[in-house]
Length: 113
Image (tube, rainbow, N blue to C red; front, side, top):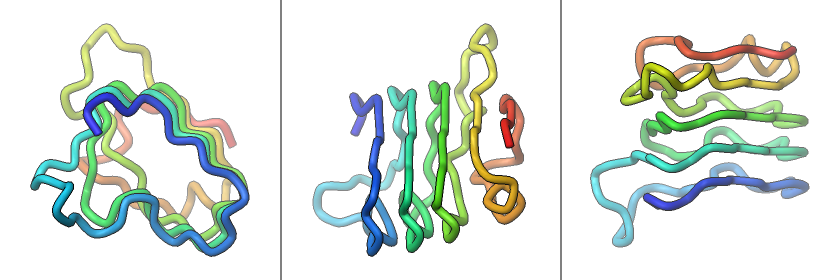
């Protein structure tokens, strides 16, 4: 997971979670230090990316379309370099209004609705 840079999933109508409950391949850490892009489209049953709270300090863009059930996105600000520009979240307003954020808020984010 340390070298994962992109999550791009489309048209999986029954998917509820991308990374299921931590098992033998997971450690206690749920950090994605290299993750830069998340693009999720037409995943109406998706509730979250990872069951546990996750951090992605290098995240640049999150694009959500047709992901009406998503509840949480990763914390972006934790460990983010000060000179890194804000992450861009592009999603429907209804989705944005329902989101819960891991961490202490939506610092370092620009929203496109």
